[in-house]
Length: 400
Image 1 (cartoon, rainbow, N blue to C red):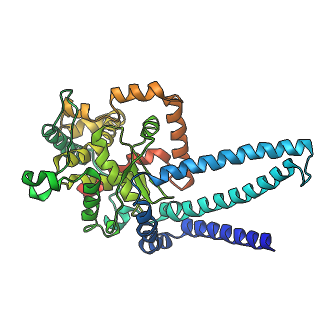
Image 2 (spheres, rainbow, N blue to C red; image 1 turned 120 degrees about the vertical axis):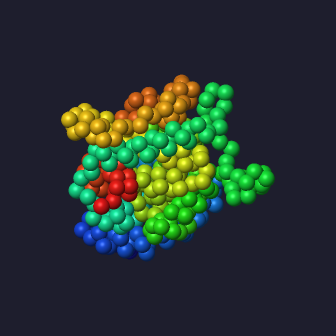
Image 3 (cartoon, rainbow, N blue to C red; image 1 turned 45 degrees about the horizontal axis):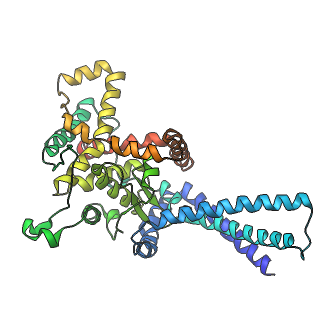
């Protein structure tokens, strides 16, 4: 009777998960309602609980999941061995092992079901909601001119050139940052020092005054213990739907950190698409009065704009040359390009020197997983969607 009730409960939850996904794929209105009214509950409850811990809870949940999976594989091999030996007597030691294996697999099946439910509630539904552009920009222009692209690029490049000169640097030229003095200035430096994570939370809340869906409480972004492994994946941060946390790679170049924090916090407001999170992270950072965070914001989109200009030069040479007669791209300073890096050479040498798996292998595997996840959730161009932040920048700076 107990087993029958368990099976019925399992079946009902499975049906509920399937129903949620079917409705999400077919109703943008439902997804928008869910993000506005239900999704914030998980952030404001479970997110506050995990926020009490100084370390990434999600990172350890992933480790626990890998352990559970590994045990399931080992026990499966034991079960297979017992089947081959045809020893199933309950009074034998092996018989007790078989009973334990069956119990573990019931636990494993429930764990997989809970993972599917959490992923549906905190990730999959979000992929089918209205976009940031649809919420706040309305109907977009069918196309943008090369002149408009160059104008936005120039604005970003000019700000990067200007702010690079304001950075405090060590003897090697690396940017150093001690934090913000806040509104009280240098006289209160000791007591008013705020770290980057808290500043980014406030910047996101400030952005929420203009964009309603971004309004609300934000947890403190946390550095990941396995940041070296993140570097091997060329990943700057993770949003963990299991713990409602924003996590970042603290081994990467320091100028990547502010925009990454804001990017991951944007996911906690229901913006799951990477291009949207990139754009929101940019907006949050460039509104800062702190030159370091502002510089980090402009740097976060420089490559995307530069790459799109380069593609235009390659594929639309005549149009590009015509645009150049009206507006010429700004030259980015050598210092900016030096600052515009993912991980320093010294850190790469250290990471690769102790890596258990070759970085190229890890990076390829990560790309395949990320690309597959995006395509499964309806993002047809997969990881290429990361560069669509340029379209959002053009919509923002070149409205109809």
